[in-house]
Image 1 (spheres, helix red, strand yellow):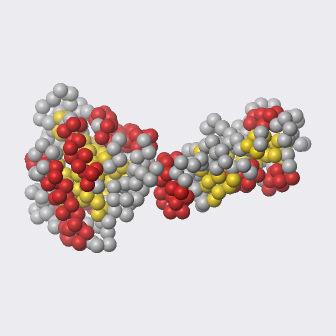
Image 2 (cartoon, one colour):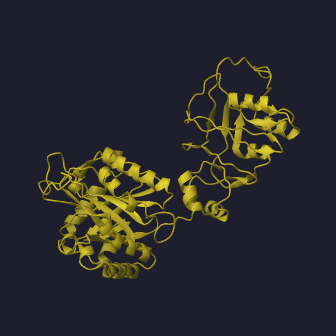
Image 3 (cartoon, rainbow, N blue to C red):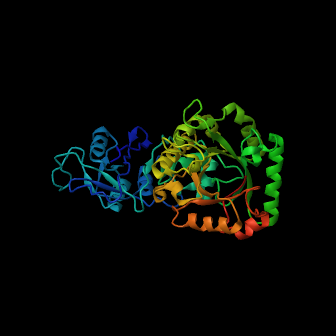
Length: 456
């Protein structure tokens, strides 16, 4: 049960409306509990904050009881409503009419049994139940002052009228019913992703160059300097735009950030860290050029979460996402190239939860979260991988190499029984594929069209 809070809307000196936060859907509040049912959270509406009856109509569908608050000496009635967890309405004709609409019996502040009700001898457990699936916090309470109460869509990023309303007064006071707090904050801050919009991959396709800035051995991103890399990925994106003029393509760099190593190294985990200062020139240039950055982790015997935290300063930047490469996630005695590594769903979920929390805390645009996989065993218990973080766009990157036939076979196997709501990534190996698909072939033959197309 969430602790209840109350919304206080003032008319003169009289505080008039109390309402509560959500409990779990379908929870039985017990025969001694007063109940309050919230209005359907979908849709778009507003009500003036000073009009408590209007606010009640706006927020509430029904209530088992209410307390009427007199204009003179209202505190006892307000305390009574708070104790019971029921709305407090003004003791006026409109207030009594609203109590009737709610189907509520009227409780007096000095009558603990209420009007004909059985005595309530112990604390009640008030419940607000959404008519749909409740969000973790059904009501987000703000100090409204003279502002309006605003009800917006559950995810205003997906509802243009809600987004427009939020952007109209980004600093104004707000009480939102049913909306995700993170989505509200990024819309109000106009924190859009690279390429525009609120989503990292929805309605767009990232075209990435993969590698390490130290040189060409680890991929095409290291085959030229920073300025030339920007020019090269832009040229690649133009080819895709020519092949599919109606689609939205966005350039990206996938930077190998920790590199699987032949020796233990200073951390004893067979994974070499790249200093943040060595990555910043490429990350800075990408931000200036409108290029997404994806930090790729090859953790060796370390964990993905441990290494991700080492690059928090970069991941706090709006255009930087994260990729996990289980091929290089070793067991406690493993060494690189002895066998293909793997990771469990729990470790993936701990990492995504941390990244989502970081993104939410700083109201950053949605980040791309990539999971590399070309064998089924690389992500154990994959059906348990969470893909529901609104802060992240999860992409499974099928990065096998070889002939087109072999690659399409891998593509089909990895896509079977995938978690819900994932996007897909395809990798073209410039030297290892036999032969590599060209731009037109990649776009025509790889279906569904990938959200992430990478070149290594």
